[in-house]
Picture 1 (spheres, rainbow, N blue to C red):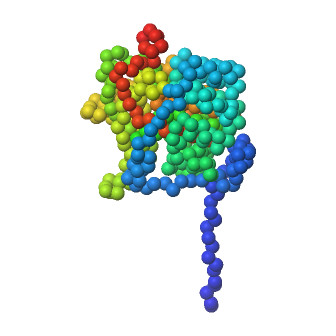
Picture 2 (cartoon, helix red, strand yellow):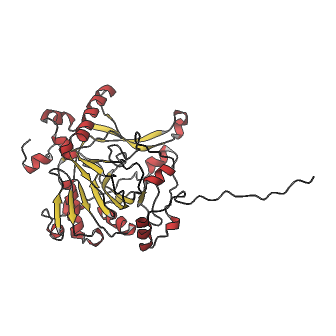
Picture 3 (cartoon, helix red, strand yellow):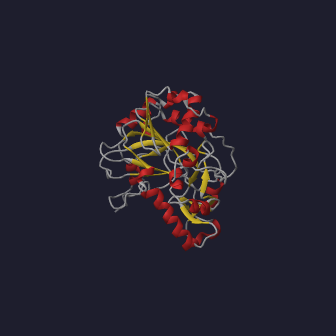
Length: 373
């Protein structure tokens, strides 16, 4: 019997969404911006080797913080808002009646200063395209183009924040182990010039749950005793990346993190205030101390951030809300209490800032504001 001829059959190319249906609000936003939802999202060519990642943005970039040139009264910004609500005493302000896409340069400078002073600023009902979100991020600093995460097509640096897609890509989440963003962290601490302002715009959110919390680095520093502050001032720590890469020179050792040294206490260039700059996810050790000594101190410092609810703010999202926070002076965590039972989708732009620095003469926030410690 003659052999049966068979045709070569190519495997179907998976859809960019891996079979997921884009939430209606997200699809409408993309179409309005001239972006084809069928091509959404795109994925970067991920670097494999450690030296490739160290080479990304390895050259020094001058950064002038927009908040440093702002009118300290912030009159142009605040007078244009219909309402200004400070959500807690130490962190978090919500602005009503403003559209981020329509701000003047003067108002953008003043918004940068407000973020520097209040750590995170919220605005609801924002009509802002991915292109406009990127343009605002470019005003605040160099837009980070993430080498690992999905992006909006044609708008480099606008990353896709879609938990359902992350799960499809092999990053499982459950009630007991909710995943990466559901732990206290600060973005991109391993960069030579780490993140400044991050802008997350969520077009789709759960009706119940899915809040995000932020904690103040200014107030975490002020929670410490004066003598402990003196001990920490000037110390440096090692900070690592969220992802691992292969070392060409030591491939048998297994994937390694990108690691860089930065000040443990840093100063914000717009306010001049000291901030405690550690996070449990990505701060490895304090330089000059034995690992056991470093672990003991760092675990205490993590707890100061995480356990003092009076220096935290919790934001209940609504569709088309934006949050802009400063990674130089905060940690944040996402609550996965909705357990993926409702869709959540947004886009994020992170602006890289200056090389972290310490100034022994700089005051803490409470010292600068004349508050009793």
